[in-house]
Image (cartoon, rainbow, N blue to C red; front, side, top):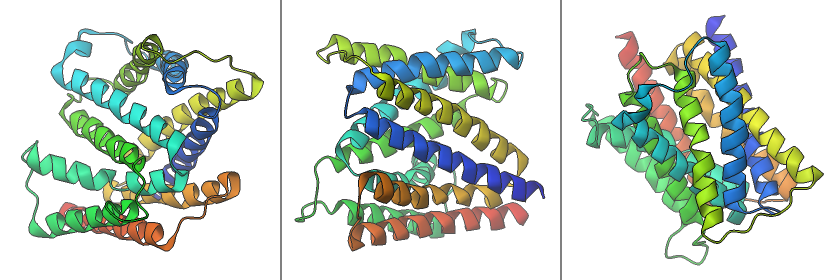
Length: 287
């Protein structure tokens, strides 16, 4: 029953994150990237900071200056900046499909940077998954869109964030780390605005979109954290891939997107490769 509840929470988190992507993509039609980042950083950081305080944790501590925390915050900024830019330029379904390679990139980074042991089967699955990403992007072919490189950069940035999270001592509360990462989007957004992006007035509709983004972002974070703590990781983690299903549905219903066969094939290959790695991890954990 614990695993079933955790799976339900994981799927719920993926719904929340997809709704957040949708709201950001809609907001990019009216306000620039810097304004979105600054708004998310201020209100998202404020909300997470309040939750952190209510949980009895200090909001700001000396661990903010730890190298691994700084690395995580910088990766959060880079990944989110590229993510928002990608959503403003590329179909939601395409961005979501490329982001499905994030667990594969984390596996690769764990082997290369953290020196974790990765067997030949996981190496093979990782390489196959990246072939799926190449099929989605199709570099050098007629269907290639230069803007998809933003989604690829977002995937790399978010992977580096997840890798650096592994290095953060477990004694530092998870909510405090999340508050750091979200709040750092505020100065990043302000810097973009200072270097040429104009601040646009936010009407009622855009304000509602940004409020929705903050609300579902925080709700998604709380849901995914509860899911990973409640259930077995090898059982729960594969349901992260349900996000691509929701993204395809939202892309079609809200934005009228129709991914072609190559995009769907590449997404399927990437997801299957990731599921294989999760299955391998599950078997190792039970041995």
